[in-house]
Image 1 (tube, rainbow, N blue to C red):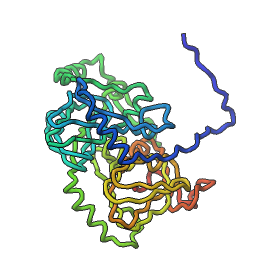
Image 2 (image 1 turned 120 degrees about the horizontal axis):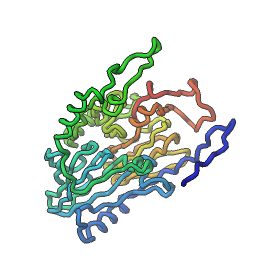
Image 3 (image 1 turned 180 degrees about the horizontal axis):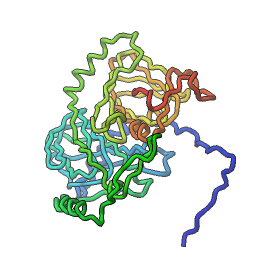
Image 4 (image 1 turned 45 degrees about the vertical axis):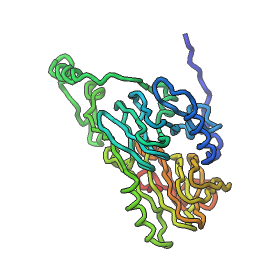
Length: 365
């Protein structure tokens, strides 16, 4: 029998590990891995995949503790088996064109298109072009792996509708229903909820949505007219209304498309959420905890490890376009999102006078 361990922590505050160092996976490294995957024999389920792994990550497979990123390749005419999993995904095309089927809904996808795959939806991918079909897939599977609850099914059977009738029968069975229901306990706003509502909350539809790059770019390019006096970031969130106030593309992640005109320098800032950037046009640099990292089109970067002071700047060789994946919605839901703007150096103390923002006040970017 496993025995519990007690860890003495009286009077102590929790310690934080040193911030992870940003990492840049270059276009050349990604292209070489694409060619390696393309040259291998086709796996039985059709999934040619590699994961990007941060060398500091000993807890999960991911570029950040809770952000898993995979490189997925299909040869012309190839398609995957069907899959279903309890993690959610953001999908992004970086080469070729293909088609995705999610819960029977068919969509053709092209370069720089983005779409989400909700949890427990049956999906598959197919290459319908003459070139390789290459995608980046961002998933909260890394977090679920650490929790030891990541469920992935291959060639799953559709869920049976009879489950709904069983629920209806259970609701009608008086032995399974607490007659007192959910009620307010006191004037301070504390409530009490019975078992059957606890385990079966009202359902919210989680849609599979699609953001075609051709349409997104049309609106994104208008932000260049904001001029150099604009102090915000020229970006749009690819918003899924199902996420509500947490401002997500999935319940875990937001995906933003950013335009950086030449010679634009962001204000230094930091946030408890981690950010992964894919740059697909232009070049620039990121300064993270005082160290400068150069990047260019085709590079993938853990650009903002959680709570690291950072800012980004574009060079003068044309505009930068980038996709940012950040686990801010998860942090908002957990009430763990902290955000500080206009920082020159990592502050020794945290307080309102330093620009501290809670998740009620924080802004994306």
